[in-house]
Structures are given as C-alpha cells and as structure tokens.
Amino acid sequence: MGQPGGEQRTGEVPDPAAGPSPGVRGPGSATPSGPAAAAPRRISFARAFVRALPALLIVTGIFYDYFTPGDYTAAPFFTAAPLVAAPLYSQRGTVLTGVLAVGAVLVVHCVLGIVLQVDAVTETVTVTTAAVLAVLINILVRRGDERLASVREIAEFAQRAVLPEPEARIDGLDVAARYEAAQEDAFIGGDLYAVQDSPYGVRLVVGDVRGKGMTAVAAVAVVVGAFREAAEQEATLEAVAGRLERALTRAGTRRDSIDAFEGFTTAVLAEIPHDKDVVRVVNRGHPPPLLLHPDGTLVTLAAESFALPLGMGELGAWPDPAVQGRFPRGSTLLLYTDGLSEARDPRGTFYDPAAWLAGRVFPGPDALLAALSEAVRRHAGGALTDDMALLAVRHF
Image 1 (cartoon, one colour):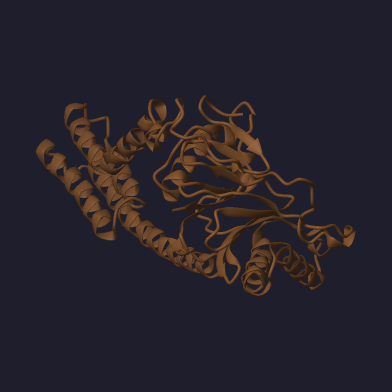
Image 2 (spheres, helix red, strand yellow):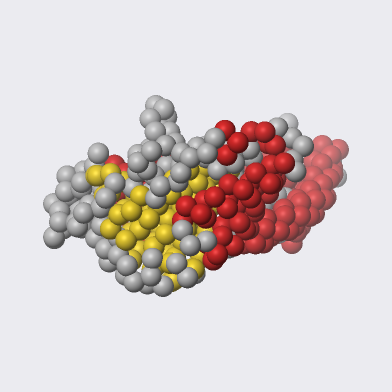
C-alpha cells in the first residue's frame, strides 16, 4: 500500500532510499480544505446568530407591535427573548434581557396609548413572568454547568494519574501522545499508552482493554502500573510482556463479573535501546506499529507469528519473539489502537493509516499526531465510534 514515493515493507527495516521521493508531502497537505475548512466558519456564524437572537426577538417584537393592528400581539417575541437568553448568557445578561423585554413592551404600549388596556396589561404580565422564569432557569443552568465542570476536572485529574503525559524528550527521542475519546466530554476509557526510560532502553506500550466503563479504566491502571515496574526490572521485552500477562491474570481472579473470564488486553510493546539505531517490538494481538522514515518511506513492523492478547495465558503458552528493525535518526515510530484503524467512513470503509502516512513527512511527532487525528476524523465524518490512543516517537 502507499502513495507514489512511499514503500511499505514488513519485518527487517532496510536503509531508506536517499533523498525525498516524488510523492513526499509535508504537514501542510493535511490542512483541511473545502467543506472541512468551511465547517468551523459555519459553526462560528451559527453561534454568533444564536447569541444575538434575544436582541433580534426584542427588536422584531417592537416593530411587530407597532406596525400591526391592535388585535395582533408581539408577546411571543418578547416572552421568547429572556427564555432564549437563559441558557446562553450570564445571570446578569439574562436579567438585562428580561428588563429590556419588559421595557420594550411598556414603551410600545405608551407610544400606542394602550398601557392600561386589558390586553396590554396581560401582555406586560406575561413578559414579566417569562423574564422571572428565565432568571430562575439561568440559575439552574449555571449550577449544572458548575457541577459538570467539577466532574470534568475530576476526570482530567484521573486521566493524568492513570495516563500521565510523557516527557517531550527522553534519551534522544521526541515523544508525543494523544488520547481521543469517542464519547463527547469523556477523558479516559479502555485505551492506554506509557513510556518508560529504563536501564535497557526506552520502552513503550500502547494497548486496548476489552470492555468499557470503570472496569476498563481499572484494567488500564493495572497494565500501566505493571508495565512501569516491569520495564525497570526485566532485561528483555518478552519478559515485560510476561509480567503484564501475570498482572492481568491476578487482577482477573479478583473480579466477580464476566471480565474475570473474558477480560483481555491487546497490546504492542516496543523497546529502543540506548545508543542503538534499532527498535524491538512484541505484539500481543494489536495493530502493528508503523515506522516512517525521513524520506516518507513507510515500514510496517508486523509480528512474524500471531500471539493472543494479554490476559489469555490460560489458553496456552507461547513465546513472545520480538521483531527487530532499524530505527535510523529522523525516523518516527507510531503506535496506535484500533480506534484509528477501524474508523469507518459513511460507506463502511475502514481507515488505513499506513496508506495515508506513506510518502508524507512531518516536522515532529506532535505534527504527525495532529494531522493524523484530523485525517481520521474527516474520514469518519467528524465523529469517532471508538476511543483512540496514539503514541509517536522520533529518533533525533
């Protein structure tokens, strides 16, 4: 797969061809254009219109009441103005909108000389009542927003505790990580990543826990905690995978739900030894990492044989042979979860990150992840159906 100038291979990584290929494109090629670029402008215009709507309703009500016969009333316009303002404005803004609506009604009635007529009094009382209700609604909305903000803050702290942001530079590597939840306003789910500098090199893990909710988050904490300990102590990447297997098995025996029998985690582990231009990978049922060379050449670090996910050791024992490839300076290693590779477009076509990346170059891992995230969201029509964790490291 790939675009002109990008080659895709599996297994041992040869030297990339010298010089950029004809199909190389920079990060600017990922800039949205056409309908994708117009979407933020449409959203900004819609927000501006909605926020101006209370004032427009009051102005419309004034003209309607003044230029129509006495049998017609603009009460719906004046009543709607503070009610629309309630969820949009601050408490002060909502009160001001209600005062303006009531004042506009009284001014129109004074100009028409009908202030004390029954219909006019009824209209004034109706608008005043709506203004008072709008203020009460605004208070309730603000309290709900404060509770939601508190919940979001707690979720952010939980994410930072379970999935702390890795350091931007670790032992000759530029590092970038990105977590995007499919559910709006969610901060953490069953996807995970971690980076650990160890005596044996920089070690990385990206994984996807089966299931959702707090059970998945608990499993993420188990895997990340076990990885950080094992990465420091185990001499080989295969032994690190074995420690993760045992940690998940122990955690599974303490669960009373179906996860005690069916819980598992797909994961890919990578190791970049100190002062060596190589990378080793152990894959346990996870999408293979991608290695992007400085000239845009793409290599898929696929496992030589299939291995079951972590947590399924009771089904049998098998070795975890590590795949080794060259990791020359300027290259970027990308690890990701299936939220990226299984994103579908409206026709049901899966997203292919290898085909999109081949032939492209990026100034750094942050730029790569930002462009890739934007590309997959465009492919999926703006919304993901599964959480997505991305981890990229560049050898500088």
